[in-house]
Amino acid sequence: MSGAFSGGTVPSPLLLLPRWLVPVRPRGALENHALLVVGDRIAAIGPREELLARHPEVEAIRLDTHVLLPGFVNSHAHAAMSLLRGLADDLPLMTWLERHIWPAESRFVYPDFVRMGTRLAIAEMLAGGTTCFNDMYFFPSETALVAMEMGMRASVGHVVIDFPNTYTKNAEDALQKAQEHLTGLRGFPLVKQGIAPHAPYTVSDWALQEAAALARQEDLFLHMHVHETSQEIASALERDGRRPLHRLAGLGVLDSRFLAVHMTHLDASDLALCAETGIRVAHCPESNLKLGSGISPVSALLRQGQKIGIGTDGAASNNDLDMLGELRTAALLAKGREQDPTVLPAMDVLEMATLGGAVACGWEEETGSLETGKAADCIAINLDRAATSPVYDPVSQVVYCAGRDQVSHVWVAGRLRISGGLAVDWEEREMVVLAREWARRIAEKDGAR
Ligand SMILES: [Zn+2]
Image 1 (cartoon, helix red, strand yellow):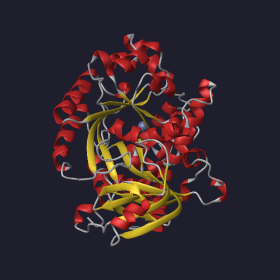
Image 2: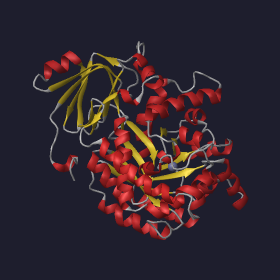
Image 3: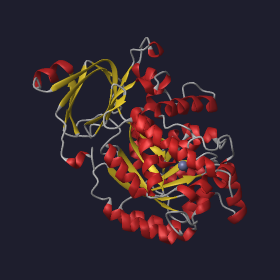
Image 4: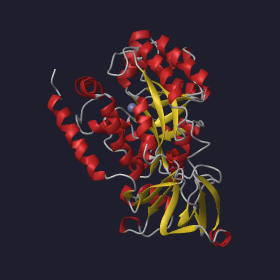
């Protein structure tokens, strides 16, 4: 397992000297501050001169024109789907799924596909400043292994779905596989696990309750697509007279360990249920826009105290895994929806994309903010470019102007993953060539019966 942090090479202590330091908790930007990394942890944050004097022996990294932030937490992804990026665009959700994605998955999704797709996704995410992702896909153990190999923090969801696929025969088989794999992945320091019932329309009452029972027993999060489209709600109402969220509440599966993804089309009764149960929300604005699904009422959810993270969803429906782009879309969309520019200010949306995501996925103790004792998951963005000049407020520049090509350094658990914008441990070129070869095979069969 080359590159795994557990492999023995503990990085030397580092003193990071950024122009601005935005810890997220507390909010705001600090100037003339430094951050000390020892092993995989943030050992201290303090005035630059003080830390320099106290640690003269430690290697100092000058980031004179950079802002230092916690890495982004992508709270909803299907990493391996990066290999299906651009396979079928500009289609409604069900057409996209039934005619293109599900047939391609039934032919190609085996461990080698999941490993390759996940490698591609992690390379893209790390280069764009994402240091943790919450995944839902088949063969989750493969996802976890690749995350470990590449030194990326991840939550992997054990998918539960009624329909047969290349990984599981039915929900019962899926629950059994989840149980089998849970133990094997427990020792991975950068990996957490979750149970991921796919969606209300693909998982029966029985399987949902079993998934929730397993999650409770193992102290895990549930991670599920909920209220993605108006069609999902309309067909649920037709089927059993209840909106999907109300059916989930009736089954007793909603609580603060339930992460609901998408959450567009919420009426007053849905919002009340969210407040009452304290469920977490993963907001995926670009996927919702691209699939024409709708817009989640994020500001209403925030007003009632809901914990919200931001996710890209899979690259097949976004089509990038660019958290900087995603948080900008989230901010602009909320303002437009409410016709109020004061809604979701820059600091709030940055918090959603970092600490909010960590809270939503159960990683709050480890990541999501730069605080002494937490894992050193840090990113540096170089603002010394025309597109981000001048800088009155570094947080505003990050949210409204910075592009992911400005992410210069990325550390996960103290290990440098990206330096000068380039991957430390792998060749991007090699991945591009392999992805092209996969795409050739997949495209050949696309649309075929
Ligand atoms: Zn999704």
